[in-house]
Length: 433
Image 1 (spheres, rainbow, N blue to C red):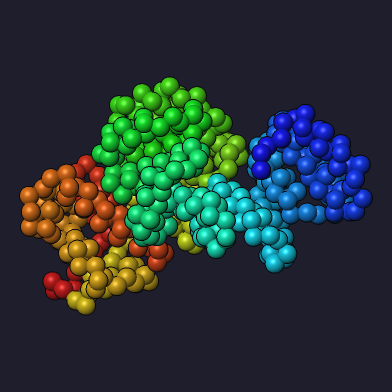
Image 2: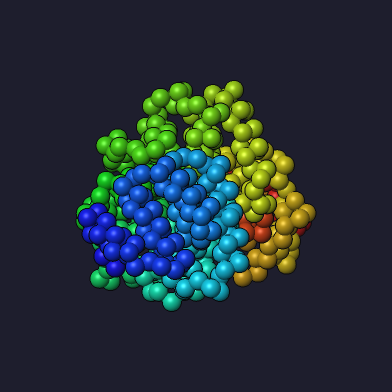
């Protein structure tokens, strides 16, 4: 459906208003008028119109979705979060009465917003439900966002599978907006799976596409986030690209300062959690701690703020967010590697490694010394001479293991940093006893 111009929309609404007689028709008309306000950026007027409509004509799922968007765009995050809960309740109540396309679009909106509230498992669940729809383009968009989400957060070991399934879509003849979304998701997946070293190749691919400034900012800031989490320095070409970008909103502005290490001492960490969605705050806070960009006093305050923020999360989401923080208490983690290739972490979490012999070998070697070079591990595990190919193999191996550990609710146990793989726990290897 083509978007109406303002003049066409006014004429259409005028004609429809004369014809609208039923209660539902009048509500649809109001809904269209509110859409017009949103197009013009009149968010506060739209909020008033929606609340008036609720009072006079009753509740409507579509209007609640519009209200959530308005609260988000006006940075009223408390009301925004409450509105999302209301939409979830209405969706459960009226799911069978909603068209397939409307149901999928509502799920997509909830998936996007719950990612920003930090409810990552719920976001992924809604994206997965979108795959059940019948609209091919919406299914593709869901797949794109599943890859993007799995690349950004350690939510499970399925990233490789979804990445492989999505990659052929980039060679299809699609609308430019879809191509950019696919490129964004695949780029993040490659940085997540292969590490910062893949940036130079990605930059060549990205430069072949005509990407608008807003989409470019979204992509570069996400890539920046992923690389900074590893503790490695950002490539110079990425730093240069970030310096040219104009941030949109406090999250991008703060991330740019962290990446360029400018005005970091001016970041108001205590108030930042209320100035943006919780998920964005947690991303920034974990980066600041990982990159050692705050003083010791600020680090203590920031960690307390994170702990308080995470109290309201599910155990799985709490574990994912904690996994993004630098490990400062590895001595509290203990693990046992059994003779029958089982791993038991803190006497609570169990992982079967019988079909994961390379991971078992890696842990066996690290049980005798907690840190080993990639060169040494290549020789011991693959019986080969180290090169870039084995760098990627070992990094993927460590990531796959961490994803599976996080999936059972335990903290990540491996860290790849400065050419080493570090074990973040006391590991007892019974097979060597």
